[in-house]
Image (cartoon, rainbow, N blue to C red; front, side):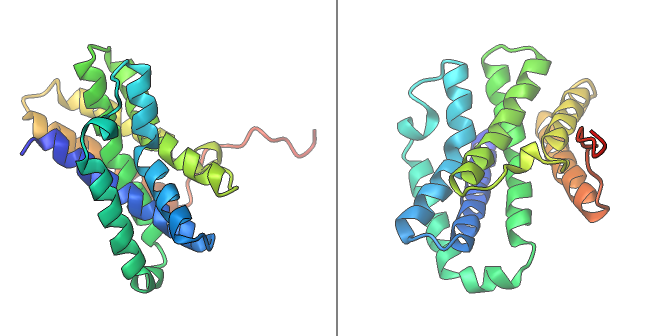
Length: 204
């Protein structure tokens, strides 16, 4: 099985579950839960594909994405009580999702012939904008617009991936290194409460 495809499916599962957890917290009905999970899982990828002219977008041409989201939603609903015991479950699935989707987006950029900096931007967009749509629909300020280390982790992980490509390291290991960097930086930032400085001036 194609390594890139596996990453894409794992990212879809992670983001779909994170969407379900947000929707359940907002006490949405089953249809609302599915919609939030769906846009979280494919929102960033849809925007990415439209920008690079890769249409119809991925989930319209391969039904495996729809069935993966449906299975993930069913799993998260059935085991919602167990997931609620895991206080950090939403954070964990969201973090895994951005790590996987950053590299998926970069791969799409490389396939489209984009330069590394554009690929990193595309990867960051793929990773972050599903969550942006999810949070806006749930009437919350998207995480990417707060002080948290979120998009910055995607940029750092994507940059490390391209640096790794300059070494003799095999391509799959470069991918894994980039993914782990995104996840690791995000976990580190939350664990030690590291954030970007705010531009708000209380004296103003």
